[in-house]
Image 1 (cartoon, rainbow over the protein chains, first blue to last red):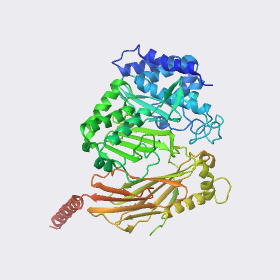
Image 2 (image 1 turned 90 degrees about the vertical axis):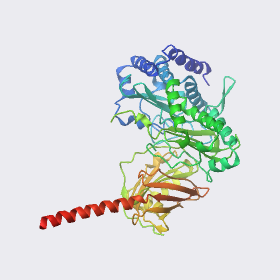
Image 3 (image 1 turned 135 degrees about the horizontal axis):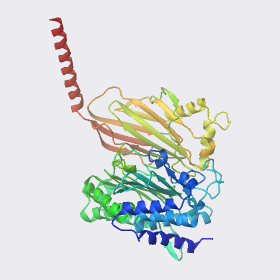
Image 4 (image 1 turned 120 degrees about the horizontal axis):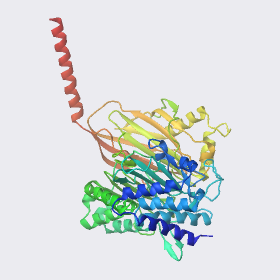
Length: 347
Length: 205
């Protein structure tokens, strides 16, 4: 049974808590929320949910569900209601309102997947798996993990990791800077109904990209559309530090309206992070727009299968339906120059 | 075509990172890194649930449920033999081949990724335009392919164009090696030789 009331509360409460904090100081908000979360934990829970900043934990993330992939950190289903609220308040403090809703939509989608017994592609609820324990593949809201890498600080670098099936939000905090790359927002199902409302966690990403490809003229499309099929992410989890040769149409070949549409597509990923940090990131992407490419593979008719990629000097975004399933979407958001805050963190 | 396997090694330091959960496809994702004197090849092979057992059984020749060193080497050779890599129509041998194969149970849910790493040495450094061709024909009946070139880390190399077939079995890539590079090094070498000669003559005097 889908716990509608609980989910509504889970969505509303962290936003309410976060909105009481000063809006102009995202790092201070995040640090305060992190410390508030830590105060709810016992010693054993702290030991399980916190890691040294220099540890390998920061690269321990995946799109895969529990039972196949073993995450470190604190599992939502193992926390008390107070701890869980504080954990989600921390995530909400780091994200924008729309970004927090997006990740909530992704988690609620996984609850739908759980109740449906799995999806057409991607696995079956409870199916046996070799790693991760917990009795096979597990879906649902309980199967998301939170971890702090380094001590919450307004000056020293540290990291917030929150993720589970089809979700990896990795936020590195370095003084006033908040960096959300690499992160992986994905969705299965890509469309479901909750409280009478149709939810498409990645619907705007899809629709804006289709609008852009259809706003190009024939010559532009011939540049943007790749002559080959792209059936998965080119830079999936585990491909940190790789920079592929850009392809597609450069934004310098787009008119002003098309460039604005391209930035609007990118903002769906960048804007998951809190407003101040995402505005700074969008300004950076805009400054590099002439060296940013838009590549497309597949149908240009919305509602059909298509892969697309935005790649610039400081951003890579990929959107890839899985195995011909429109209801199963993987995406990834990277910054080849600043994943895990590499530009800001002194070795 | 030259498909010699110069060396096969088990690469234990590569992390096993599961990055997909597929069903009836064998995903073969290749990344090529082009240098002045060599090409590095990374191939990540992820069999989906429905094909994972077949792939594992092909590798596990003695059917004991585990992959031993000989079986690893044999599969590295099989994959390498299905790869054709050439530069300017000169077929290149894949050398320093390393492979990591996950355990059977890790592959059972379509998430175990086999990682093959290799390199090919280019015969001599030349400035100007070159054409690299890559073809992967390993298990075409159930596979989907990705092949991409990484942005060269050497600033003297610039990728000009890329062409693929629709299924990404094949990549043909034109790249330029900065023509100033050999001249600059020739000048440096000449200056060094001149300096050495001057020192030698002074010593004799």
